[in-house]
Image: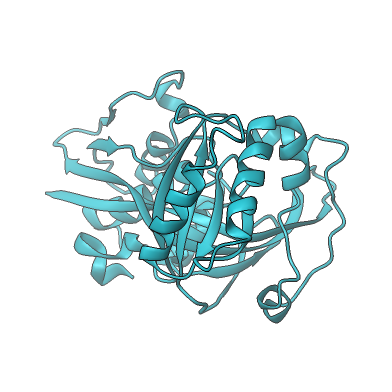
Length: 299
């Protein structure tokens, strides 16, 4: 049997760090929305109990790959351990704050739950996934959500599904290092969705990222300078997750294309090249693209 599934990216429409627990984990409040920009994973059953993931990811040991770890973890919940060949078509940027690794892990858990006929529900899968990363449960949950705690306390929300222009700088942000920054705000107040809709929100990583990465700062300046005079942009550039990817909401898909054209005309002015930053136009999705195709019945 074979399954092919999407592993979508996500955007943090805001991200407030609200405190720090005694175990060192930071508490936060954030709003997750999926996008139609996805990695693709294919799963093929094996007759033995071997798990194989291809292709190898440069600089990452196979046992440290979240796809492999998710498959191995789920295998331990099976009465009769089964194997699988997993093929990854990588599209999402690594270290960009779009949740690619967590999404890969979640898609692996959901797909293998079906392939191996384990019959586990989403709540159980999310508990398993939490041990792999705080963002994994929202990808299993499969719906746009307001998250609190360390990101695992989820409240489903239905919000607008706009088009976004995403900037992908050629730098990579290390989340663990950013959490150690002394300048990082750690006492943001909890807000309500209506506060977010009125514009009362931000990403607490942004000031630290702009200081640490001049490239991110220049990209944000360029986007904001262009968006300010554009009818196609709604608001300013925002950071997703702990960076390095940025996004700006757009009025429409044609509007996003026009905004991109206007922005790229400004690149020389901000001393940026096509090697410094790439771009992607995506659609916001409240319902995860994971639960389409082979997994449509699971959503």
